Image 1 (cartoon, protein in one colour):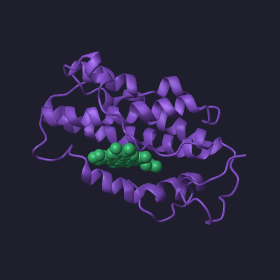
Image 2 (cartoon, rainbow, N blue to C red):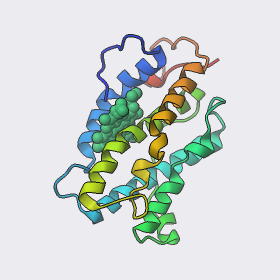
Image 3 (spheres, rainbow, N blue to C red):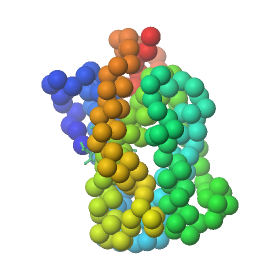
Image 4 (cartoon, rainbow, N blue to C red):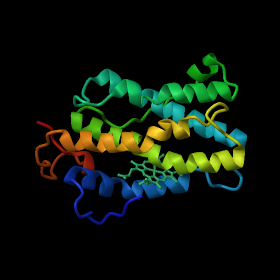
Length: 193
Ligand code: HEM
């Protein structure tokens, strides 16, 4: 993950997203149990259920909101179906999956900029997923067919899709950030034309 120091040569939007989320990423890494010695198959399943409870509503809201700037291939990048397949492979019925708790406090996705911020997080998570995939394969023998597909959701395309996402971010026309007064949402508070 990246430090909060400005990165020379990195587009300002990406730099703002990285520095605005770096500490949150560190906190998240500490909170997630993937490297915990006690992690077992049951715990992994609970983590995946929690992921589902976040991805399902946030992807639905991003999709339904219609505010994502043009050029983002939503259908190709949807991750909820892969999570659902993993949960099925782990033994959950469709009914049980539909009944899983949904995150009630999603980020506000009421502007194109907020959507871009959320997409940065969702797309960037596929990078760390590569490390988690290897760890889960080693420790719990998980693979794409038995509940581990989400951690490798883009497979060999991971690097290329991240690069394409960064190109997309770089191409979105942006106005300078608003002054700090008013609603403060840090790195994501960037206006779009
Ligand atoms: C224990 C769990 C996690 C680990 C070990 C981890 C690890 C990493 C690593 C090593 C990278 C850099 C990869 C690269 O540059 O090739 C990365 C990038 C990133 N991760 Fe994670 N990650 C974890 C969880 C998450 C989660 C759950 C999210 C989102 C909710 C997330 C969001 C991001 C983002 C946005 C980036 C891209 C940073 C950038 O290059 O701009 N990570 N992660």
